[in-house]
Amino acid sequence: MASTAISPGVTYRSSRLLWLRDSINWLYVLPALFFFCMYMLYPIIEVVVISFTDYKYLSNEPMRFIGLTNFINALQDPVVHLGLWRALYFTLIFLPGVIFIPLFVAILIDRVSNPSLASLYRIILLIPAVIPGPMIFVLWRWMYDFEVGPINTILVNYLHLFTYRNAPQWLGNSPLTIPAIAFVEWWWGLGYHTMFFLAGLAAIPRELFEAARVDGANEWQMFWNVTLPRLRPIFVILVVLRFGTAMAVIDEYIIMGGFNRALPTYTWTVYMWHLAFNIGNWFQGYAAAIGWIGAAAMLIVVGFLFYVFRDRD
Amino acid sequence: MSVSAKSIRSAQAIATYPGRKQGLRLSAVALHATLIFFCLVIILPLLWVVLMSVKPVTDAYSGKLLPSQFDFTHYGYALQRLPYIWRNFGNSIIVTFSTVLLTSACAVLAAYAIVHLRLPGKLLLVSLLVGTLYFPTRLVSIIGIFRIQASLGLINTLPGLILPYVTLNLALSILVMKGIFEQISPEILDAARIDGASSWRILWMVMLPLIANGLVVLLIINFVTAWGEFLLAYTLTNDQAMRTLPVALATAMGGFGEWVWPALAAVYVMAIAPGITAFAVAQRWYMKGLQEGALKF
Image (tube, rainbow over all chains, first blue to last red; front, top):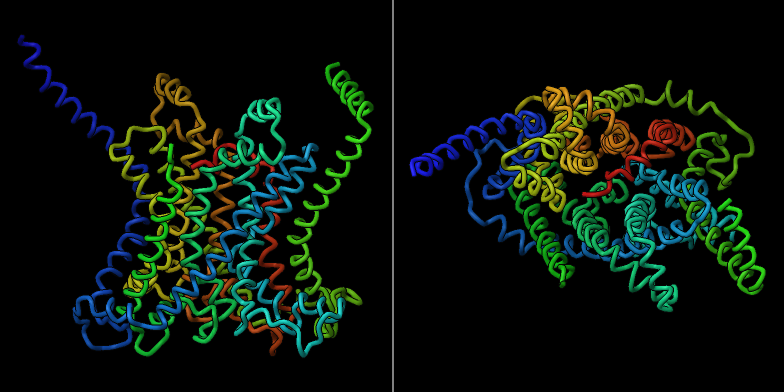
């Protein structure tokens, strides 16, 4: 009787001691936490605060709290609307190519029986993954260049399909711009995403295929009924993750398009940066509100995608 | 023995189905042809920029893809004549080296604690990290980061770039390392603990050799991000002498003044060569690291 009365207190004390002792382990997380709080959490909170003010960086006037005015203005701003549509258009072109082409290539590499040849293919495809994104965009800005770019050089001088007067304009104020930039992303992500799918394919037990073959399934049926369901988790992560990043890209637009509002590369991200660091007195309060609206639009779609791809079983 | 028996059997199988043999060969040809096509798509743009850097200037502007003769002087010209190019290279090297070191160290420490130590609030931490992957943190936080760096007087300085750079890949790095640490059985840890090793010693003596391949993946991922970072460098520096290579290259208007195309291409080749060389040297460990769990999070 006495022991039962004491024991809860003892476990309480010892569990608290254990908790204290285990908390020492947070020392390992401390360096990461410092950077995380200082340069991610704190700036984001600050951006929340200034999005409710009329803060302008270059203005000497003190900032005033103006409530939701920035958000209301931004939601009615035609440039914001256009910018969100442009970003969505890019994302919709970008996504299929960045998912299905690597899936296709991964299935092909998975069938290469010679191991050294298979790893040679992997290494070549992975080369763009070790070139930083902005460097890739610089390279492709030159590739698409109207005069020295090799694409038009081949079309004009080697294939004689066009002359310099009617050769396609890949970047700038042209309907080809967004598909051209999406292609660059496919090129860049091909090897890396192929690796994701190859890891998924390697995890499928071979017996499943043999069992399906015994049951008389052909290659196509095996792909639909065995391979694809098994790749589903990778699929979902890639679609959702890449959707998020694609809606909010900015480097490629600045490098390949600059700050010309008429160009299809002037999306909500470029508009935000332009307002915050270039236009007028640097309208950072308003820009912060635009940033939040873009992020919210993105999160809504990410949530929707998670809902669509949720586990139904 | 078994190999020869297998090959005999398959040879018999092929012999009995002559039509199937031809079909197999055709599909193998199609398979390799398709893969070679994709490899060419990857390699040709890079080959173009390398060829551009060794072309005589007249070839560069006359629409010839292959150089009529090789001219390697552009590399010397770029390094000697282009304004600030040494500074830009130096800035990139310092910033990248510091960022890779700091990020990787933070990630290894944090991931070790998450996977192998008791950590109250672990779940919250991990879900916070995963959450940042689905949120455009870099974009939303940039105004705040600019304000912090401005108030600390760090605009146009290298520490002003390094500090925010560490967070760029921090969440991803911790998750990658978490995947790698999870491949290590906790029994190894228990055994070392029974021998009286502290958690710190276990990390250094036991864990580090085991995560070497994963560390290669981590270093390469962080190198690539830091070496090529554009947006923050573009925002936090406006002095040409303090800028990093990607900003210098992205803002250089090719073909005008000193920036003749072959010289620009030469700078470009020098800028991407370190990454590709490091990858070529380390690809064996990189591939192993990817298979050991760097892709599982």
